[in-house]
Image (cartoon, rainbow, N blue to C red; front, side, top):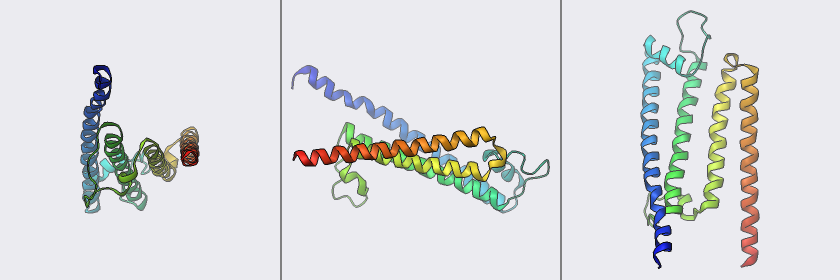
Length: 191
């Protein structure tokens, strides 16, 4: 290979620090998950300070109108949905880190490894886009559900804006999937 194409091809390794940064970001999410879970467990055993931290973190603003917050089913549900949100974002990070590295930087040589994710065996840029779009819709759905459960603490403008953004994500994902389907059909017809 000539020097310029070799340099251009080697430049893919510049993405490595980005993937390592995403791994660190995932570590922050893991820490956040455990802090919130610990607060939920402490609140379940009567720790008022942990409950106050939970209520503040979920944005359950004036639900208790000046009185001490209580661990209600709604509070538990909002906290658990927040934990699910963290897990889904973490899954998204894994897809980006592993799928992106495998697609754009270097093969991981995981064939035959018992822990190889099923989706990784047929990952490419197109499949990765569709998977990321569906993951974003899942995250948006959880966030929208949290907002609707806690709707009294949001203005109509915020509720409408979040719904419109979610619908935009849905349409974007459908457009990406449809485009991918058209491209795979044209590729199959060419062969």
